[in-house]
Length: 79
Image (cartoon, rainbow, N blue to C red):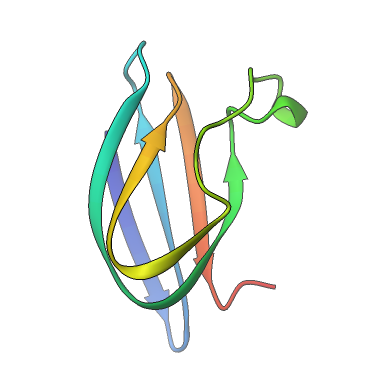
């Protein structure tokens, strides 16, 4: 999996690309504050089987559950 984090002022986001054909897990260290899932390509609305990723995350060490061949996007201060 590949994780990329970006920020501009108080807004921040990160995405994870999981290329594995089996479910996976990824440990990350996130800056403080709350993070909201904006996109999970494994969700049924995108034609997936349903994703295991949490809808909200707190800052600090986290472990993400990743669906096979999926993309996750989380935002901080997201609306």
